[in-house]
Length: 400
Ligand SMILES: *Cc1c(COP(=O)(O)O)cnc(C)c1O
Image (tube, rainbow, N blue to C red; front, side, top):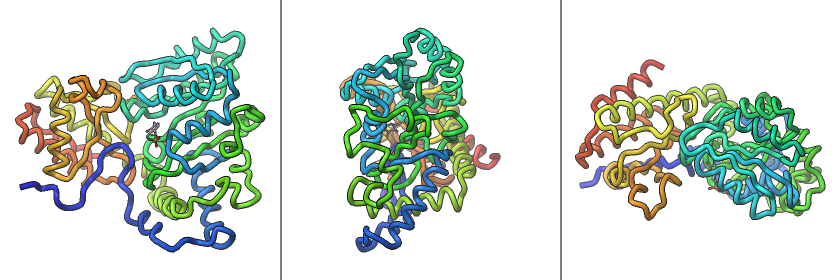
């Protein structure tokens, strides 16, 4: 007998859990795109998108996923032959770098491995070594969703400034926006990239590129900037259709508007960040307790300051992570994330990695429930684990 019937919980890091309110907001007839309420709603969305990113700068919306948002940023930032310094802390830095390379950008890579944050000192040294000033921009991942490593964006900005280098700072915040504290202007970010399906609790299909006035001034006339990707008419539209370079993503806008209302105007950004921080600590506490009884069970990131508040990557020893994922999905209705990029999918070691998402529309009962399902799965599978994980997680929730 399976105990999975009931509302399923998709705890992979994106698409995240969507509020019924967001889904219901989308359940309606096609609106007039030429005038009326959709235009007012879009104006509000644009204001809220800037608030959620912590910027008074510019924002362009694209009908894309995260990969499309990377490409949008690249198309505006670079011309063919320009140089990007890309920082990798897991999987997604390489993804953005590949996108840039395929577009003709010369990529210099600083790879920090898969379990520590980007090192500002190495970034500063790389920029100091660039005496000719060839590097146009530093591309970094705020939270790498595969490794769950979080890097200190303000520290990377400080490193660029300490080197006296004019490079722009571009940040992939696809996994962190709406989960981890993120202050684009205060942290000196020039270009910020995100998508709808993670912290913003909306179906995949919208990508966002925010850009500073400095980036706007420095990125004009590039030879990669074809009409659809050009951020200037989207961010400075005088006609509604220019916001989307064509037909508006009508139903995504209804859903996103509802999600932003919940995040910005009801719960409030500070409370959203605090909720994610607490749920993350509950997950870490459970892993610490499990790991105390089995050295094969461990969080991927040792330093709590370098851990995401939206997703936790962990190891369980192969093949137990895959076995546990299968058990929680089929027996308890909780789908956990695969261990992305930690080992090749044909390598037996692959089955030792997994991830727990605590991203977006999640609350204490969902995270505690996911942890309890994992605890039950370890018992059912005969996987040795330390005691007290659920008590430890509950204590975090109780004592926040
Ligand atoms: C999810 C994610 C991406 C890729 O987004 P897609 O929508 O799958 O293209 C890129 N970067 C980060 C940090 C992500 O979390």
